[in-house]
Length: 67
Image (cartoon, rainbow, N blue to C red; front, side):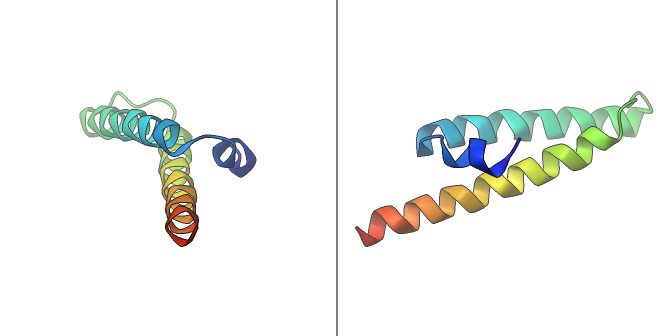
């Protein structure tokens, strides 16, 4: 997911996406622990997407509070 895609979403959409990614992250960690994880790169992508969403959400909330 690109930063421009994240910035185009509303705060509610970002929260929904964040919940979805956290569930996926949990499932990936579980697969890794049981030795069933095939795509190890996906863990890194999910972790970075979570950070990207949290950053943009914080920026939007700060801008909203300032206005």
